Length: 74
Image (cartoon, rainbow, N blue to C red):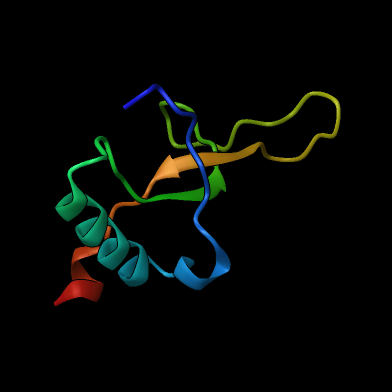
């Protein structure tokens, strides 16, 4: 709770279901807060269009919150 920066889990927890299991275990210890699954994805604007980097002319990629797809869960 000392204001640590966001950190990426190891490759062992790279799938969302493994990250969810890790979060459940971490919450049981009581020494964590604000746990969430994030994924690297193309950053989009309000209209849903990708934000383009002016230098490289490529879409910007950044961390976004992972939202499980309802169709995949069912």
